[in-house]
Length: 189
Image (cartoon, rainbow, N blue to C red; front, side, top):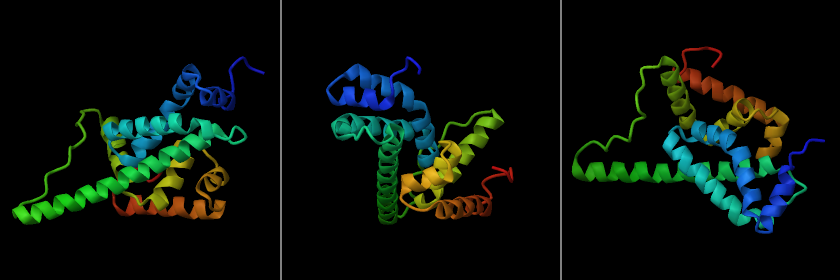
Protein backbone atom coordinates (compact mmCIF):
# COMPACT_ATOMS: atom_id res chain seq x y z
CA UNK A 1 0.00 0.00 0.00
CA UNK A 2 1.21 3.48 -0.78
CA UNK A 3 0.72 6.53 1.38
CA UNK A 4 -1.10 8.23 -1.50
CA UNK A 5 -4.82 8.66 -0.91
CA UNK A 6 -7.05 7.00 -3.54
CA UNK A 7 -9.05 9.19 -5.92
CA UNK A 8 -12.33 7.80 -4.60
CA UNK A 9 -11.40 8.72 -1.02
CA UNK A 10 -10.41 12.23 -2.09
CA UNK A 11 -13.66 12.55 -4.03
CA UNK A 12 -15.70 11.54 -0.98
CA UNK A 13 -13.85 14.12 1.11
CA UNK A 14 -14.35 16.73 -1.61
CA UNK A 15 -18.05 15.85 -1.70
CA UNK A 16 -18.16 16.70 1.99
CA UNK A 17 -16.73 20.14 1.20
CA UNK A 18 -12.97 19.52 1.51
CA UNK A 19 -11.53 21.91 -1.08
CA UNK A 20 -7.96 20.62 -0.55
CA UNK A 21 -9.04 17.09 -1.46
CA UNK A 22 -10.55 18.44 -4.67
CA UNK A 23 -7.39 20.43 -5.40
CA UNK A 24 -5.38 17.20 -5.14
CA UNK A 25 -7.71 15.55 -7.64
CA UNK A 26 -7.27 18.49 -10.01
CA UNK A 27 -3.49 18.26 -9.74
CA UNK A 28 -3.56 14.52 -10.46
CA UNK A 29 -5.82 14.68 -13.47
CA UNK A 30 -5.31 18.06 -15.15
CA UNK A 31 -2.45 17.08 -17.48
CA UNK A 32 -4.00 13.97 -19.07
CA UNK A 33 -7.36 15.72 -19.31
CA UNK A 34 -5.78 18.77 -20.93
CA UNK A 35 -4.04 16.58 -23.52
CA UNK A 36 -7.35 14.90 -24.29
CA UNK A 37 -9.17 18.25 -24.55
CA UNK A 38 -6.42 19.80 -26.71
CA UNK A 39 -6.55 16.91 -29.13
CA UNK A 40 -10.34 16.97 -29.18
CA UNK A 41 -10.85 20.71 -29.81
CA UNK A 42 -7.58 21.43 -31.61
CA UNK A 43 -6.83 24.80 -30.01
CA UNK A 44 -4.84 24.89 -26.74
CA UNK A 45 -6.53 28.04 -25.41
CA UNK A 46 -9.96 26.53 -26.02
CA UNK A 47 -8.80 23.27 -24.43
CA UNK A 48 -7.95 25.20 -21.25
CA UNK A 49 -11.46 26.66 -21.25
CA UNK A 50 -12.98 23.20 -21.70
CA UNK A 51 -10.76 21.85 -18.91
CA UNK A 52 -11.82 24.64 -16.56
CA UNK A 53 -15.48 24.01 -17.38
CA UNK A 54 -14.92 20.33 -16.65
CA UNK A 55 -13.41 20.96 -13.23
CA UNK A 56 -16.15 23.46 -12.37
CA UNK A 57 -18.76 20.85 -13.29
CA UNK A 58 -16.86 18.22 -11.33
CA UNK A 59 -16.80 20.44 -8.23
CA UNK A 60 -20.52 21.15 -8.55
CA UNK A 61 -21.35 17.46 -9.05
CA UNK A 62 -18.78 15.88 -6.72
CA UNK A 63 -21.45 15.17 -4.11
CA UNK A 64 -23.17 12.86 -6.61
CA UNK A 65 -19.98 10.96 -7.52
CA UNK A 66 -20.33 7.21 -6.85
CA UNK A 67 -17.13 6.16 -5.07
CA UNK A 68 -17.60 2.59 -6.34
CA UNK A 69 -16.85 3.81 -9.87
CA UNK A 70 -13.48 4.86 -11.27
CA UNK A 71 -12.94 8.58 -10.68
CA UNK A 72 -10.76 9.08 -13.80
CA UNK A 73 -13.53 7.58 -15.95
CA UNK A 74 -16.06 9.91 -14.33
CA UNK A 75 -13.84 12.93 -15.07
CA UNK A 76 -13.21 11.84 -18.67
CA UNK A 77 -16.96 11.52 -19.17
CA UNK A 78 -17.44 15.09 -17.91
CA UNK A 79 -14.62 16.28 -20.18
CA UNK A 80 -16.01 14.51 -23.26
CA UNK A 81 -19.39 16.11 -22.61
CA UNK A 82 -17.75 19.54 -22.36
CA UNK A 83 -15.81 18.87 -25.58
CA UNK A 84 -19.05 17.91 -27.35
CA UNK A 85 -20.66 21.12 -26.08
CA UNK A 86 -17.68 23.07 -27.41
CA UNK A 87 -18.05 21.38 -30.81
CA UNK A 88 -21.74 22.27 -30.97
CA UNK A 89 -21.00 25.89 -30.07
CA UNK A 90 -18.31 26.05 -32.76
CA UNK A 91 -20.71 24.65 -35.35
CA UNK A 92 -23.31 27.29 -34.48
CA UNK A 93 -20.62 29.99 -34.52
CA UNK A 94 -19.40 28.91 -37.99
CA UNK A 95 -22.95 28.93 -39.35
CA UNK A 96 -23.62 32.37 -37.93
CA UNK A 97 -20.36 33.68 -39.39
CA UNK A 98 -21.28 32.21 -42.78
CA UNK A 99 -24.70 33.86 -42.66
CA UNK A 100 -23.15 37.15 -41.62
CA UNK A 101 -20.59 36.89 -44.42
CA UNK A 102 -23.31 36.27 -47.00
CA UNK A 103 -25.18 39.32 -45.74
CA UNK A 104 -22.03 41.42 -45.92
CA UNK A 105 -21.01 39.91 -49.29
CA UNK A 106 -17.61 39.07 -47.88
CA UNK A 107 -15.68 36.06 -46.71
CA UNK A 108 -16.17 34.92 -43.13
CA UNK A 109 -13.62 36.21 -40.64
CA UNK A 110 -10.67 33.89 -40.33
CA UNK A 111 -10.61 32.00 -37.06
CA UNK A 112 -7.68 32.68 -34.79
CA UNK A 113 -4.81 30.61 -36.13
CA UNK A 114 -2.47 28.79 -33.82
CA UNK A 115 0.77 30.60 -33.20
CA UNK A 116 3.30 29.46 -35.76
CA UNK A 117 6.53 28.11 -34.43
CA UNK A 118 9.79 27.41 -36.19
CA UNK A 119 10.02 24.05 -34.45
CA UNK A 120 8.92 21.30 -36.90
CA UNK A 121 7.82 19.06 -34.03
CA UNK A 122 5.53 21.80 -32.70
CA UNK A 123 4.09 22.36 -36.18
CA UNK A 124 3.46 18.62 -36.62
CA UNK A 125 1.73 18.43 -33.23
CA UNK A 126 -0.44 21.44 -34.09
CA UNK A 127 -1.31 19.89 -37.47
CA UNK A 128 -2.17 16.59 -35.81
CA UNK A 129 -4.33 18.31 -33.19
CA UNK A 130 -6.14 20.25 -35.93
CA UNK A 131 -6.70 17.10 -38.01
CA UNK A 132 -8.02 15.15 -35.04
CA UNK A 133 -10.25 18.06 -34.00
CA UNK A 134 -11.91 17.92 -37.43
CA UNK A 135 -12.89 14.26 -37.03
CA UNK A 136 -16.49 13.51 -36.09
CA UNK A 137 -16.76 12.69 -32.36
CA UNK A 138 -17.91 9.17 -33.30
CA UNK A 139 -14.34 8.47 -34.50
CA UNK A 140 -12.41 11.02 -32.48
CA UNK A 141 -13.42 9.84 -29.02
CA UNK A 142 -12.29 6.19 -29.34
CA UNK A 143 -9.03 7.30 -30.95
CA UNK A 144 -8.23 9.79 -28.20
CA UNK A 145 -9.29 7.52 -25.35
CA UNK A 146 -7.08 4.67 -26.53
CA UNK A 147 -4.11 6.46 -28.04
CA UNK A 148 -3.90 9.53 -25.82
CA UNK A 149 -5.49 8.45 -22.55
CA UNK A 150 -4.01 4.95 -22.75
CA UNK A 151 -7.26 3.05 -22.28
CA UNK A 152 -7.62 -0.41 -23.75
CA UNK A 153 -10.26 -0.86 -26.42
CA UNK A 154 -12.42 -2.64 -23.84
CA UNK A 155 -12.05 0.24 -21.36
CA UNK A 156 -12.88 2.76 -24.09
CA UNK A 157 -15.92 0.67 -25.00
CA UNK A 158 -17.15 0.83 -21.40
CA UNK A 159 -16.46 4.60 -21.29
CA UNK A 160 -18.44 5.16 -24.49
CA UNK A 161 -21.14 2.54 -23.92
CA UNK A 162 -20.33 0.31 -26.87
CA UNK A 163 -18.32 -2.83 -27.71
CA UNK A 164 -14.58 -3.31 -28.06
CA UNK A 165 -15.12 -4.40 -31.68
CA UNK A 166 -16.95 -1.14 -32.40
CA UNK A 167 -14.08 0.80 -30.83
CA UNK A 168 -11.59 -1.09 -32.99
CA UNK A 169 -13.59 -0.25 -36.14
CA UNK A 170 -13.94 3.42 -35.19
CA UNK A 171 -10.21 3.77 -34.50
CA UNK A 172 -9.38 2.16 -37.85
CA UNK A 173 -11.83 4.48 -39.60
CA UNK A 174 -10.44 7.54 -37.78
CA UNK A 175 -6.94 6.69 -38.98
CA UNK A 176 -8.27 6.21 -42.52
CA UNK A 177 -9.99 9.60 -42.42
CA UNK A 178 -6.80 11.26 -41.20
CA UNK A 179 -4.84 9.63 -44.02
CA UNK A 180 -7.51 10.54 -46.60
CA UNK A 181 -7.28 14.17 -45.57
CA UNK A 182 -3.52 14.05 -46.11
CA UNK A 183 -3.05 15.66 -42.71
CA UNK A 184 -0.39 13.29 -41.52
CA UNK A 185 2.90 12.64 -43.24
CA UNK A 186 3.82 9.74 -41.00
CA UNK A 187 1.91 6.59 -41.95
CA UNK A 188 2.10 5.37 -38.35
CA UNK A 189 0.62 8.68 -37.01
